[in-house]
Image 1: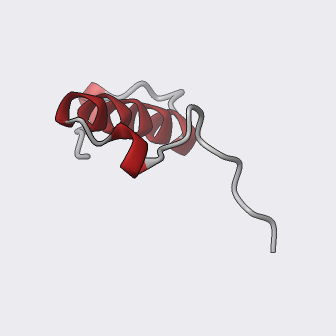
Image 2: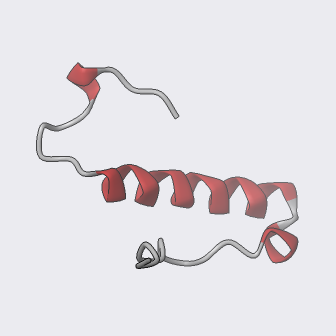
Image 3: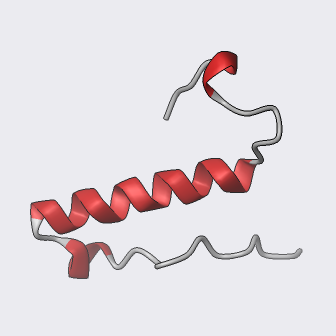
Length: 50
């Protein structure tokens, strides 16, 4: 996903971008008929702590 500085709010976070990417990915998988195989989460998971 690519966006320019004038397309993204200054308040946007990396999680905001991941939420959008996840939503688009889930929608595309559904339209292509492979949502169950894609097994994408309904919500973006929290990052793992190391």
